[in-house]
Image (cartoon, rainbow over all chains, first blue to last red; front, side):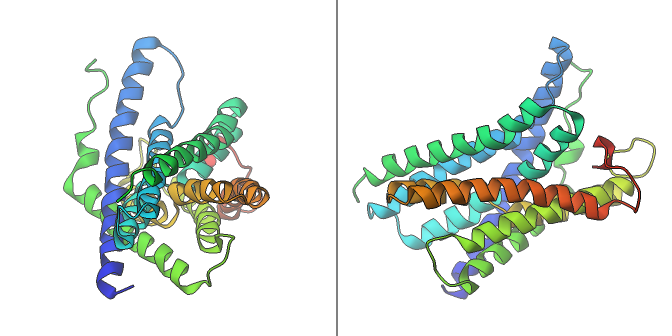
Length: 136
Length: 150
């Protein structure tokens, strides 16, 4: 771990956080428009859920590729630990789930917690499998 | 569809810079934790970061809401900036869902099924408990926890 790599990880993490923020802002806007049109009460953090699912798949893929020797370990650090680590978030998901429990949306709380976690693990597993199959 | 305007103001330079700066610091702290803790089969660094980060975010948001975040009347500019820097940025960067999912998947693939399930379940349960506790700690004595607490 050189200082340069550490810095690159941090910067990549900042970029990942921005990507999350932009995507989640736009997703929230679309959800609000959809809600208005449908007259339905959506109130589910779709943006964060999709981000966490996609990010988990991508990290699985990246780690798989590095296991197959296709990708250098320092790129796993920068893109994986850095960007995808900044992109995905566990804290937001936890607080959102607690909020849902407070409001009484218990089924949504289960979906947002156990549902997304299982989905993310499965996707990470698929990514690992796909990535490790691509020999360098 | 112009009843819901595109949130351009949320995507301006200052919000983006706050998220980027916070995200970089949060990510650096997470990586520092990974480097400092000894290697083990159980991913202690990611586990601690995720649980502590959940507590801190619950605490932060509860404090900010009390100080005008999300309320239409009050000036929520500073609370919103704090949310972007520390919440979206730092704690969003400090915690990670991808490392959690990939960690569990890797443990499953290497045959450590019990450890994988344990790690996933404990992170989930303690993460939620921590978020709840963070909100609780931020609440004033005797103040009931409601959906408007956060």
